[in-house]
Amino acid sequence: MKSFDYIIVGAGASGCVVANRLSANPNVTVCLIEAGGSNKQPWVSIPAGVFISYNNKNHDFKYEGAPQKHLNNRVITVNRGKGLGGSTSINNMVYIRGNRKDYDTWEQLGCEGWSYDDVLPVFKKLEKNEVGQSPEFHGFDGEVTVVKPQDTNKVGQLFVSAGEHIGLPENTDFNGKTQLGLGTFNLKQKNGERVSSYTAFVKPVLDSRSNLTVMTNTEVLSLNIEGDNVTSINIEQNGEAKVLQCNKEVILSSGVISSPRILMASGIGNADELKELGIECKKDLKGVGENLQDHIDSMVTVRSNSASSIGVSLRTLLPHVIPAPFKYILKRMGWWTTNYTEVGGFAKTKFAEQANDDPDIQFHFTPLYRSHRGKSFEFGHGYSIFTCVLRPQSKGTVKLANDGTHRNVIIDYNFFAKEQDQKVLIEGVKKARDVLASPVFDEIRGKEMAPGKDVQTDEEILEYLKQTTTTVYHPVGTCKMGIDELAVVDPKTLKVIGMNNLRVIDASIMPKLISGNTSAPSMMIGEMGSMMILRDTK
Image 1 (cartoon, rainbow, N blue to C red):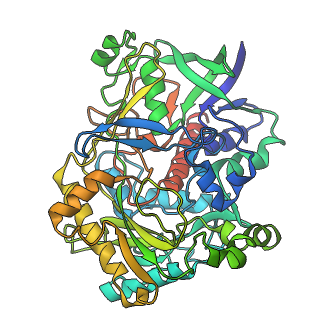
Image 2: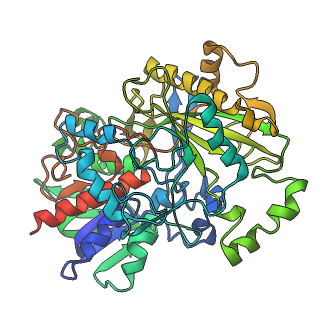
Image 3: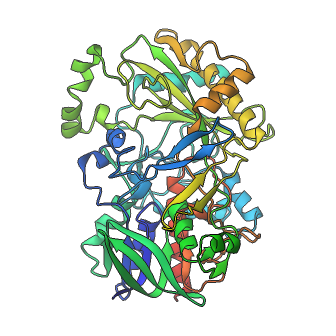
């Protein structure tokens, strides 16, 4: 039986940070386990290659969620990264930390040490900002290279200009003093290539650290628990069952779906539910798999009579499509550098607190034609605004399926369970339409394809949302930290409550969803958790 001092389950946004920090000590052995593969395919590192990675079984778990009773019983696809880097290898690379209020709210909920003032230095430590933004908010010596887009699309700049017509000024730093406004996103890229958590934290040190082992194509089935300690873990590697011994600690960084699954399969969770599944309860923690939150999202899309947006047509073959690979290989320029979401912003609906500048919706603008949400690629030209509710009130669950395997889960987002989320997103669609109605789009504007001119009243918009709305792939919260009855981990240590050597360090510990993209906050959580482990071992 192989043994390691530290076993980290999940090589995603958080787990790779933990692996880097713990393996810096040559006197301990660290094993980083990933269910997926190596992600060495070239399209993984090419920003525009995200279209290939999404929904690809080699890179995406592509879970199927439960039918959503408030969305006409539609099934929501849950895209989660598979392979080294996790979801940071298939996301849009947008570098957003969230709002100051988000972290201060965490502290108010009993998560001492997680206020904005506490986490800001950690964000700065991880960041290598090459934009030249204020040192008050940014770091310049970290592992995560942050840049502006290499080759910004013209239509995206029209979007930024359009904000002024509805009182949304240009914002050059969404991670600075305020989130409000429209602007160009910071991206996690280096030399025109994707920066994933793996390429930032593990790949650069792997060859020089003999004490760091990375295991791919390895699924963790469950943990073996004696009393308050994990003694070993059960894995399946390339179809072969094995057991790994843990000498010091096990760290679950498997994400919002798999971390609670592993806990429940190991007997940590709601005792009544575990009994129904035939699993012996080792720790009765009712919050495991509860508190699932995500940004619910909808789309407004417009046809364009201009070929200036990203699209495949006869007009773009010679100037853009055919030269794209050559421009990328030779200069790291052109369409292959795009993340398709170079610009966006944050706004307030009438339901937001008007006394401050905290937004309640986020825009992601794409200079692409998509006639409806189910299509990922179509010929022709157009542009879209994706609008999401930043602080949803609806909460869902991740539960083990009662199929005898203890490997499959039922993911129920419970979207639109709270009427307030419906109201905010209806207003978000209206706000997106206001942006697209700006005179700056007059020369390129064609027909609105979605929701379409026949969808105008609140009732009509709501029905459109029920038929089309989905997630922005920012799930959090299923092993939340806190001090209430649904808390799963201790905020001061990230140890699973009642356990001595088991921690959860990933986005599942968030008590409430942050206002923005979640990969950078997940890396921050990885750093915070690493600091706690190193502190406890002194």
